[in-house]
Structure formats: C-alpha cells, structure tokens
Image 1 (cartoon, rainbow, N blue to C red):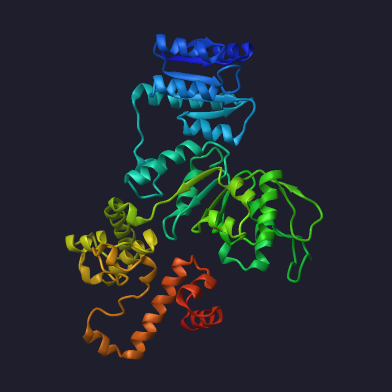
Image 2: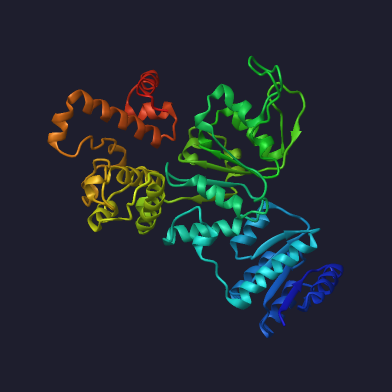
Length: 459
C-alpha cells in the first residue's frame, strides 16, 4: 500500500486529507508540525509527503529542505492558503514535486498525488525528447534549463529569459507555458522591437474606438488577449520609459487602461519576458526601471549560446536535415564527417537560428543525399585560432562565392550586391529585425537601411 505523510498544523485539514486519501486506497500518517514529521520520516519509508507551508516553528519550506536532505527521492507536494510567487518558486527550486493552493480542487490534488506516487514507485522518468519536443538539446547546460522549467512552470511566477539572439528564448517561454497549469489558455507573444513606438502602447493595452486617427473600432491588446494565460514580451529592453511605467502597473495591480479609455480593466496573466541585453547595465544607465526588472525577473533563466553547448550541434543538424529535406522535397539524409567537423569548429555568432539557416541552404544547394562542406556557407571565421581569431562581432562578412572563377564569372557588381544583401539579412537577424539596431551594426544610417531593404525586397 502506498504510504503518504500529511503535515498540517490545522486538525481539520489533516482529517480531511486522511479521509479523502484513505478512500483512494492510500495508507496515511499524520503530523501536526515539522519536527514530528521529520521524526516519522526517519523511522519509516514514505512514498509521498504532503505539507502545508505556513506552520508555527519549522515552516513547510524548512521541512522540505530537511526531507530532501534525508530522503532525496521522496516526492513532496506543498499546499498553502497564502499563495505567493516567492514561496512557489522557492518550493519548486528546493525540489518540491508540485505546489497547490487552498482551497484546492479535489480531483486536481488526487491527480497530482497519482502522478507523484507513480513516478516514485515505478521509477518512471520521461525522456527529455517527450517532455520538451519543441527544444532540441541533451547537453548538461540544456538539461539544467529543462529541470528549471519543470520546477517553475506550475507556479505563477514571472520569468525573465536572457541570452543572445537566436538561442531559442521564445521556445523556452513556450515550454514554460506548455508545462504550466494554464497550458490550455492563450500564449500571446509580441516582439517589442518590431513595433513602432507610436503603436506599441495600443498593441500591449489595446484601444477604444476614436482614440486616435485610424481607430475605427475597439481593439483588444496583448494583455486582454492573454488574460488567463501567458504573455511573452520579447526584447523587453526596447520598451520606452512610459511603457515601462504602464507595464509595472500591470504587474503590481493586475490592471491596465486601454488607449483612449477612462476605465481600467482587470487582468490575470503571467508575464514571461526575454532580452538579449544586459538589463543590469541598462538600469545603471537609467534606460530601464529597477523596480520593473525585479518584478519581471522573479525567476531568471539564461539560455546559453550554441558555442557553449557544442554537444547539441549533431542533434540539431539531424533535426534540421529532416525538416528541410521534407519542406524542400529533397532526400538529403546526412552530413559528411568533414562537414560536421567544420560545424563543430564554428562559433555560430547567430546561434541556433544561424545553424538552421546553414542547414537549410545546404539542403537547397546539395544535389546528392549527403551535405558536403562545399554546401556549407558560413560567416568568414578563423576556426581553432583561439584568442587570435576574430570576435563574433567582427564576423559579419560572408562567403559570396566558393572560388575565384565564380567571382569573375558573376562580375564585381553582382557579387557586391549579393554580399550587401547577405550582410543586411545577417544584421537584421542578429538585431531580431530591429532596423535601428541593424543599421548600427552595419555602420549606416537608418534611412539608408530602410532604402536598401525596400530596394532588395528584404522583409
């Protein structure tokens, strides 16, 4: 019989859980406080512990730490009538199986208990590929992220994801939402840098009819669309001070006011933000509010660049080969050993997004069923040179042709145009489609970049 230890300072709650769970066929032991629970756990083996958080003396979080120290494999479910994101995050970080608020749904807690005891008794572990099919990675760095996602997803805590462009921050955000308790509710993403400043407020908070020229009807903004679910704010560091202040109100008061309206609207939404900037530096320079940062970064997650998890490159290559062979109607099944060696020595300044583009081009260019090094078009980069090699910021030049004959056959004008197009696309990619930042990368004015993207038909 599955043995469960129930810890709660309220007699009525202990008795309720005992009656409920004994009807389900479990053997129940009761404890009114942390020390007596620890004493029982040290005297006999339990399959599960259920503990209240707020108890006199040793609280539930302290008990959780002691239980995990003595019985690391024991699943612990935390329950509380005083839900707080901080407690939830602490509990999940310290190894709690789940976190449930009172009054809880009876079927919900029975389901959580079945899941916890089945995993403990059967030793069941779900493969990462099954748990996170949207993210490719088995490196130690990614396994840590997967573990953190599983711990924080069931909580209501806001999350700040940071990392370089192209590392897959939105995929991590989606994984958090998909493993949360509101997975069936909307996941609404918005890239703050992709929307003009004059329209961003309306996109986030909505507007009422007649609030400005062109507002011919009421429009629901991001937060209204995501109500009950998750709002993903990508490139949060691009927000203006005014928008930052209004976002802070959403986080503090759970309310917002549409543009042109005089009435506030209540909203219940979890916010996951992402940035490729170092927000601490933005705070020091006065460009980002410190109070907003701490509201967003209840749980910070760093997504490592691809050069820090090279062990995932072969799996990613295999994934993209299958994807683009199917999409492009090719039979490219693998990559040559030398081609893989070339990729393993490359630093990927554009990260996973750049690797995907490399494989897509390789599949498109290859006429056989194997990608050869000649079909891999990379940024010019001296591999294996250590400190002597150029920094990623200096790797914006592309291979425009594969040999001198092709260069001369195409002619200088065509080659330079092609090089210019590739540099613009690469800059836009690294800047997450922010033309202002892409222009800075290229060393040209914003107007020049806008003219060139229009001229070349680059979206």
